[in-house]
Length: 180
Ligand code: BTN
Image (cartoon, rainbow, N blue to C red; front, side, top):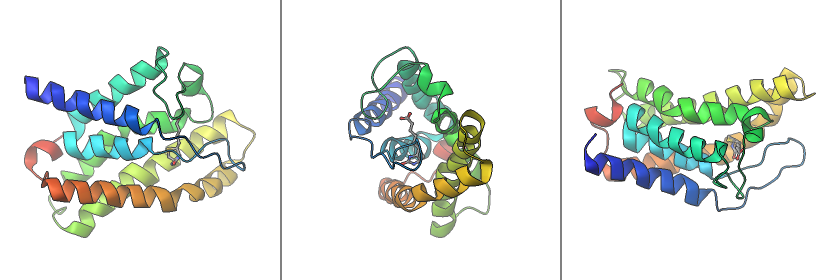
């Protein structure tokens, strides 16, 4: 990895951490808050591509795991990886691979298809992984968990649109950032 790539990756990790300083919004009816950090996760996937994106998110999650207060609201520790929000953290780690796979498909060359991939992989798949995990670790049923997670879709879709617009502005749709 070149020095510029290392700096780029570290800057995106820092961006994810800074987004975590925006206080999470508790919803009351589900033990998972609305956060801004998943915008940074999608940004990492789209700007850095599958390999460096995974590295940036892995670094961020490692910091959280060993106790640096980098999760939303200054939280940290192994408990978050096995608690109600653990599935989303797993989904975040897989996001660059999922988005990278989608964007690398030959037919993905139009605006709507790129936005759809970011939304499908960065929002819907993460929310489904999070829902299944929540069902496994809480008394909430699977259907209940999936239904409750619908609450995240509107804000998460806006985040996906924001990420798409940043990527469009940066013109990053080249082979290097989308190659698996
Ligand atoms: C954590 O800080 O422990 C992780 C929080 C995960 C929140 C998830 S990410 C997808 C969905 N969209 C949100 O705004 N909140 C949930």
